[in-house]
Amino acid sequence: MSASTTSVESSSTSSTDSKDTFLYFAFGSNLNSKRIHVNNPSAKRKGVGLLKNYRLDFNRYSERWKGSVATVVPDQDEEVWGALWEIDVKDMDNLDRQEGVERNIYRVFHPTIHVELNETAFHSETDSSFNNKTSSDNETEPAFNNETSSHSETVSSFNNKTPPSVKTVTARCYELIAIDPPGSDKRPSVTYLDVVIKGALESKLPEKYVHKLRRIEKKDEGINEEMEDEGEEQEGSTDIMKGSISF
Image (cartoon, rainbow, N blue to C red; front, side, top):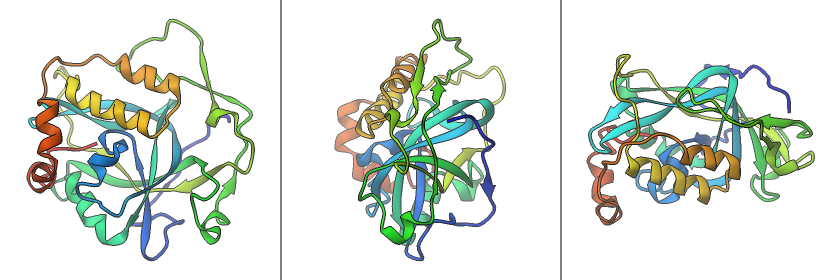
């Protein structure tokens, strides 16, 4: 697929939402099913998504994670892979609180997402509203942290699926607006990045994209992984709900 300008809607829910659910594009720790279900138990994985004309970046320090957390930043030459979730509307406020929307940490926006769908991923009435997209062109690997690739490898769009497997949807997404000043150490912690990578593998994101995630420069510090797993529910009622744990 060739690059196209990402569209943004001003409505509070995407055009493909039902009255009871909405679509959410996750690109960071919420790729991980255990993570997203802390506050959004209704979340159902619907497929792999591609956000064009944005790059993945790390622009705000989290005390809980001991490192910076992820965001997406407009960039006409880049793209971000992620997971598309369908979530009950009743969980929307929980998701907003997790991302600190009311504290002006993240803002909500609704970009167009190119989606690789499982055959039964969506109900037929929802599926029929999508625009069919071809996937014959190759997509270039995104770069992270201003890193220059040493090779010219490309990722074949959506594993060379043919229409109508690849479609577009409008989904809820979050972008950091409270960023740290220039010169700050914006590296993610090893723990945070590990959660993101595990989520990427679980979401079946393209192998070469996961490889790029593994190459992101990170801090050696972070919360203990065992403590993180054991304290998941308690964490959801404290740090996550305060917005300190984001994508």
